[in-house]
Image: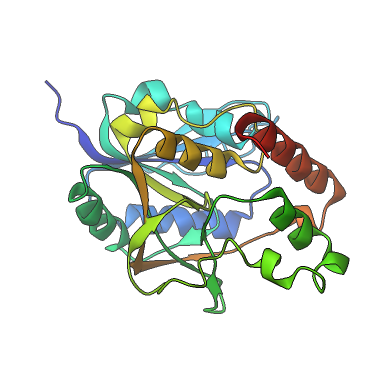
Length: 256
């Protein structure tokens, strides 16, 4: 029987900044574990093929933009018997070499926890509110439409755990999908992401499904990563409609 890898990682690629992506891959390569990285290329022209040739990196050219969740799900049949832990990673994230080993150590101690996520910082060092309570439709509307914010100030920040000590680990309802570290068997049991979401809300949905299974997600701020948050749906009308469509799908699935 072949011994399992400590870690598999998947990164879905579309319109990526090559410098940011290279930095993320180098962070992975510097992690002292038995590991493998899958690069899932959703670009039509497979533009990231033959760029990264390291032995711990495997390229998968989809040749079509199948979406974030479906892209990550491509590796499900492979990682099932391949690794103990699986990391869903964005292509614009950086971290030090011991972040993943330390998160794995913490996750191993929690029998009923399926996924762990670190503290997330902006490149300028400011804190990103990456852990949240499950969203209300009113919260999403207020955050999206600024003219509503003076009337509903408390609603805008309702999901941000501002009542918690964010310096200490605790169980959370959901965490943003830039860095999800799963026990591989749990990720496979969940069948990965719900592919009905093309982009946005799939991270909330999978955490909801973890919760429905009676398992937990843990926020672990003793470890930190840096994420170049693009906030594309705030700047691009097409992405805004994708976000809105995903939100509608989420609330139709789980209730308003």
